[in-house]
Image 1 (tube, rainbow, N blue to C red):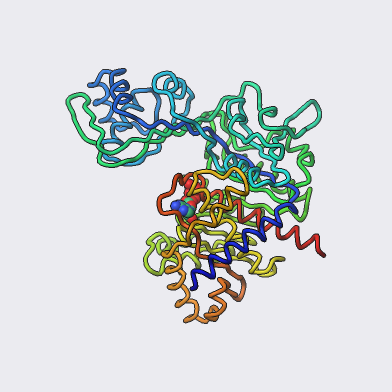
Image 2: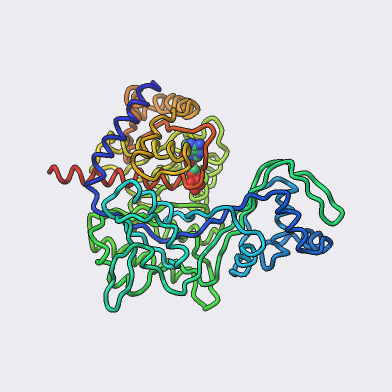
Length: 491
Ligand code: ADP
């Protein structure tokens, strides 16, 4: 594949999509956002922290390997374990007590927007979409501060009998608590002495305390559901956060209740605008019952488009009964891309989708059901646009406007990604899935589906990697919808 040609295609696609974005009237983005509080731990922080406890008690707690943070001692113990091994860990906490304690005793260096819907709303508003309607069921005053202050970013608010759209800072729920995840980063070579044991941190890594407060419900307020038409006009919806659904709640409700409400919200959105497209952004879901319910009950038949990374393709295939395919996707051997392609096609079929967009480091694959209104070239432009967004985000750690997005064009295409695609080309041409010429364009025409494959831009030493996957999926979906609206306006 010709790298220069693909660089040029990235540039052309960026300007094509930029020209189409104004045709989009609005995008709805729900449900999850949180605050990420980041603290880089120094020697001083660590001696202060250890000094707050009896060292023998910390050691005793290390032995019990707490799987949940119930009190500060659990945190101290899990931090020591993570640092001793230099191994990343994410541990849940179900109350906000530890948040208060950490704020008082350690503090954070900085805080940022976290959660897929929060990250995606900010990105789309920064790209200058006419209207982005974010909806976070637990929007607190503190959380609202993390949304970009821009006239095109709004949030529904119940006022008397009506639902009105307001800037998030004016739409929060008074008294709502915040969901704050703490991210503790540490560097290699820190020396730790505690309760007679001494070690040196083997590598840079981090410990995350993820907040799962009991009040958290993935649901839509009744009044907002009743007045969903107040959000219009919207052309599409990007939904995420379903991983927060739990099997059982203390009040007796179960995941079935929330799955059912989620489907109703989707169906209502579609009934308000039959042209509306729904995209679900998937992330890691540990619980298999929930993973399967989300795939087969919320996504299948109800949504149009799915965005996910390679690990999620394997996880999804696994609960859908395709263990062998799932295993070969996760093994990531030389023919990993072939398995990934077949896996994505399988998801399109099993879940009756219109579009499955898989992002990997160095290339993206998008599987399309036959009969989609856009051409493969237009779909390819949408993917290339999102690759430029990924480049910009990895390069500068942020995208605050379209000019900053354009900086992604400077990032080179991944040579590893091109190599993976070259390998896949041999397979496709050998199996007569396409001609070598079609593959050069990134197009595959199957019997019951089509596909677009692109090599993507990758930053060697990224400034940040959080939320790049979200930017890729949301960027490509918005670009695709914008092109659809643009062609409709020409008809
Ligand atoms: P997250 O949820 O943190 O965004 P994902 O696994 O969903 O993580 O997405 C990560 C994606 O971001 C990868 O699939 C890859 O395409 C992209 N990506 C990761 N690192 C870089 C980088 N340095 N440069 C460009 N793209 C990157």
